[in-house]
Image (tube, rainbow, N blue to C red; front, side, top):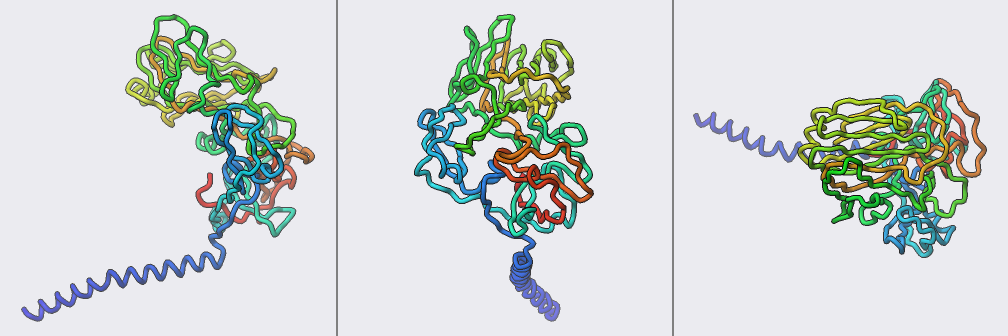
Length: 423
């Protein structure tokens, strides 16, 4: 009996010492692995330089504050050092002082150099590569076309094999650029004369009424001019601006009552009107005044609209119209190519009838607009056929990015890896 007890005591003592021993051994092994990774360059730290991938990745930059609306915006350090004034993207003031701004360090990245040993690069993925014309320099770009594809740039979009490439909802969110955020600066949204819309406590609100028509709240861009591919980050650059027709409206809505909620988008090519009816729980799409689609809302969307607050996105990126409620696509409609007359200084509107409604976090975005060539470069041949191990890569800041529009296709051997945690 005594021997049995002694055995148990020894076992308990051994288990008592095992835990800290395993912990120390684990720490040593982890340190050895990490040291090996860093020495071998499997994971490599780098600091971003330059503005070709802004705003997703920033080189050295400064933050300017508009004296008119008190909003802040970022400017690339190379631009802030070359010009005295920038244009506020929030209120349109063109004389925001940029002198004497503090310069901040660029974003720091960790590069996974093994990812493309396990799989091939994907479309819209951010990659790190050796610059084709300067092999000792690393740069960061986004893959937009894959081996064997035919690629061209038209209307600000990427076209592959004769069709515009349609980004997923997550890809749209990663590549969108802020145009206007209403929080604290709602003046670009204008209620219709005699309407019930009011700006109260950081939200646009309206009370229900019995009028048979819609009560509209319209977005008016700066000086009522069309939205362009202008980039406040590139302060002081003089170039020919292009119309940006791919827009996104994002908001958080709360509805009460039985009635209709409408979203209007006029991109200069067409007028699109989406109407949500809370009475019969349906969604309708009209194009240039003609109804082209009617379908029921999903059970989830109908329930959420009747119960409380719902996030909403309305977008026409890449010639596809999306209505998204709480992250779920409720309407997906492919838009045909249409003749475009001009842009619109009032491209978006929100309407309601017989509804109490609240709109928070009301924000307008545009898609990244890919010009045929960066500033100062010749336009590349288009379309371009890629070889079996060639990729077409672009920067997120097309006016200033040096990329495949200048280099041409990039061989796969130059793609070194992908930055961790970057979309």
